[in-house]
Amino acid sequence: MAPRTRLTAGPIAPVLLMFALPTLGSSILQSANGSIDAVWIGRLLGERALAATTNGNLVMFLLTAFVFGFGMAATILIGQSFGRGDIQGARETAGTALGTFVPLSLAVAVAGWFAAPHLLSLLGTAPEAVPLARDYLRVTFLAMPAILTLTLMMMALRGAGDAVTPLVFMVLAVVLDIALNPVLILGLGPAPRLGIAGSALATAIANYIALIAMVIEIYRRDLPLRLRGAELALLRPRLGVLRILAVKGLPMGVQMIVVSSSMLTMLTLVNREGVEVTAAFGATQQLWTYVQMPAMALGGAVSAMAAQNIGAGLWGRVGRITLWGVVFNIAMTGLLVAALFWADRSAMALFLGADSPAIATGQHITRLSTWGFIAFGISMVLFGTIRANGQVVLPLMVLIVSMYPVRLGVALGLRDWLGTDALWLSFPAAMVATLIMASAIYLHGGWRRAPPLVVPPEVPAPDVPVPEAGRR
Image 1 (cartoon, rainbow, N blue to C red):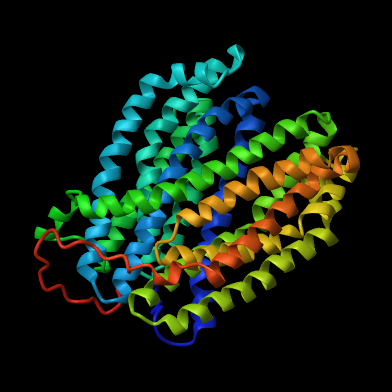
Image 2 (cartoon, helix red, strand yellow; image 1 turned 180 degrees about the horizontal axis):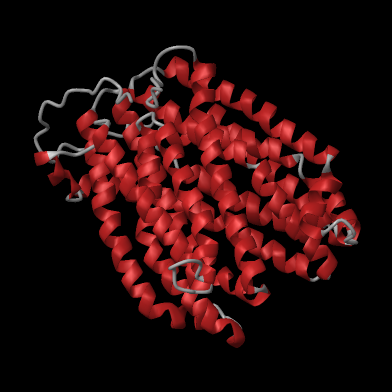
C-alpha cells in the first residue's frame, strides 16, 4: 500500500477517485461515531442527558470550524509546496500550524474547564440540564487538544497527498470511542461509573491514543512532513507562514459559521410549524448529512490535488481535475439522491419510527429539496479548485449571499404563495444560486492570475532530500 499518491502525474480520474474515497470514508466514520455516541447516551442515560450534550457539541463545532479553516489553508500551502518540490516549505507550514495550535488548544482546554458554567449560562441552558451539561462540557474541553491536533495533522497529510493514513487513524479513534462509551458511562469492569462525563472521556481517550499512534507511524515510516533534530525548530511559528494561514484560513472557518448560523435561522422558522414538522425536518437533516458527504470529500480532494498541480505549474491538469471532480460528484451524489427518493419512507422510519405521522412530511421535504445537493456538490468542486490557488474571500461572499438573501428571501418572501413549501424550496434555491455564482467565478474570475502561495524564507533552508514515498 502506498498512501502518498503522486497527484501531479498519471491518469487524473483514478488518482482523484482513490484520493477522495479515503476522505469520504473518514467523513462517514465521523458522522456515524457521533450518531452512535448519541445512541449510547440516549439509551443509557435518557433524554435529558442527550439534550445536555448539545452544548458541548456546539462548542466543539465552533472550535473545529476555525481549525478547519486554518487546516484547509495549511492543506493548500503544503499542496502547492509539494507540487513545486519545496519540502522545506511544506515542513515549515506544518511546523507553524502545529506550533501555533497545540499551545492554543491546551490554553483553550484549561480556560474551558473553568469557564464551562459561565458558557452554559451564556447559551441559556435549562437549569435542570446544567449539572449534566457542565460535566460533559468540561471533559469535552479536555479532549479538544487531541481532537483539534488530530484534525490539523490529518489535513496536513492530505495536502501532502496522503489520504490513507488519516483514514487508518480515524478508524482507530472511532472504534475506541464506540467501545469505551458504555464502559465509562456505566462503569463496566474496573472502570469507574462516570455517567455523561464518561462519554466525553471516551472521546478524549480515543483521540489521544489515535493522535499518539499516528505520530509514531509518521516517524516509523519517515513520512515527508516529520520533523527531526534541528528541524524541530520549525515548530516555532514563522510569522510569514502564520500570516498566510490566518489570511487564507479565517474566511474558510467563517464559511462554516455562516452555513451553520443560516441553518439555525431556518430551524427557528421550521419550529413555528409544530412538533411533527420539526421532527420530520430533523430526520431529513440526518439523511442530508450523508447525502452531502461525497461533495465535501470530492471538494477537499480536488483542492489538494489542484494545489499540487498549481504548485508544479501544470495548469492543463487543473482544469481536467475539476472536470473529473464534477463528473464524480454528479454520479455519486446523484446516486445517493436517487436512492433516497426510492427508499425515503424506510429511511425516515429509521429516525421517526415506522408508525410516525411525521414520515409523510419528511418524504415531502425530501422530494422537494434533496435534488439540490447535486448542484451543491458541483459548487464544492469548483470552490475546491478556486481555493487551491488561494482565493478564499469570493467563495465566502457567495455563501453569505446564497445562505441569507437567497435562502431566507425564498423562505419568507414566498411564504404567502407557497405556504410551508417555501421553506423546503429555499434549500435547493440557495444551492442553485451558489452553483451559478461559483460557475461565474470559476469561468471568469481572476483566481488563476493570483500569485502562487510561497512560504517566505525566514530561515536558511537546508538541503532536504525528498523521501521516496513513505511506503509500508
